[in-house]
Length: 125
Image (cartoon, rainbow, N blue to C red; front, side):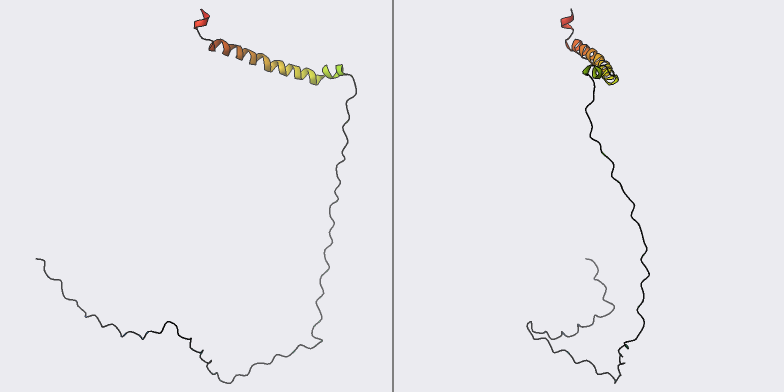
């Protein structure tokens, strides 16, 4: 069997007696009157005389000027004058035609190559 535990070095003090419990629904006690203080004189506040001090004068407000803005003028576009042939043979039309050609030629070549490759080897005999 294990040895018994050593005895405590200091004896525990007994618990203090329980305080009397208050009833759950009791009326609150009346507030205690304020403690009496020695007689102290309160300083009297005197009203200011009607001619106390001159009113301060505000400094003049700084002057500023808003920047002047003007709205841009808008003109109504007009239809070009001239013949349709001038519009077709103008520099804008020539550049548009060249751009279409530069884009369509390689695109057509790539589509033809893809169609050829997808068709399969059996059909090329």
